[in-house]
Structure formats: structure tokens, C-alpha cells
Image 1: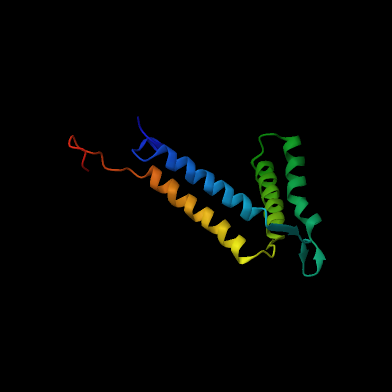
Image 2: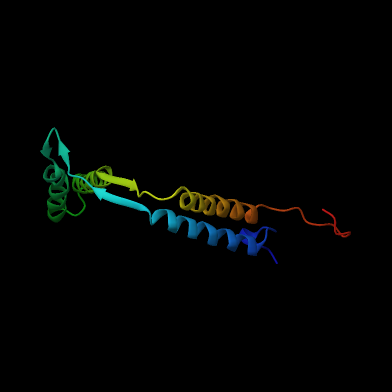
Length: 131
């Protein structure tokens, strides 16, 4: 029977590492605050301007669903809005103790190490039981 990822690594090691990784990431991400800002260009609110390509593209697509221009404007408009949302996010790590931070980071890095060890191919023992 093969282990994790079809290799000879340990299946138990893989699941222990995955559990450590998930727990560490959960604890770490639970301490992160995400806020949003306003869309400003040279001091003016720019969100409305970012809607124009999307709305024009949708209008062109309602007129002709196969229009390359319509699909291009719609795609570009959706991409502009997505990039605008992501670029205006503020991500902050809440104040926490050094011990808690170290526990979170050790869980994440230890979990990555165990998962990597489990999926690494181990040499097969020979008939005498030696590697």
C-alpha cells in the first residue's frame, strides 16, 4: 500500500502535518483584520469611473452577444473592479503575544515540513530489512 501522494512516505505523518498546518493557518488568519479604503484618484472618488467599461461592455453584449469589443470591455471592466477592490484593502495583524505568534508560526512551518516529508519518496527496504 502506498502512502500520501502515491509515495512510500507515511500516511499518518501526512495527516498530522496537514492538521498542524490547518490549525496554524486558522489561528494565524483569525488574528488578521481586513479593512477597505475608498477609491481615490487625485483626491476624487474613482469607483464610478471604474464602472464605465463594464457597463458599456454589457450594453454592447446585449446588442450583439458575439462582439469581441463587448467581451473585451466587460472582461476589462470586471478586472478593473476586482483589482480596485483588492488594491484598496488594508490588512493588519492584531496585537498578540510573542508566545502565541510563535505557536502559530511553528504549527504552520512544522505542518509544511511533515507534509513535505510524507510525500517525499523514501527508499524501499531490501529483503534483509535494510535501506
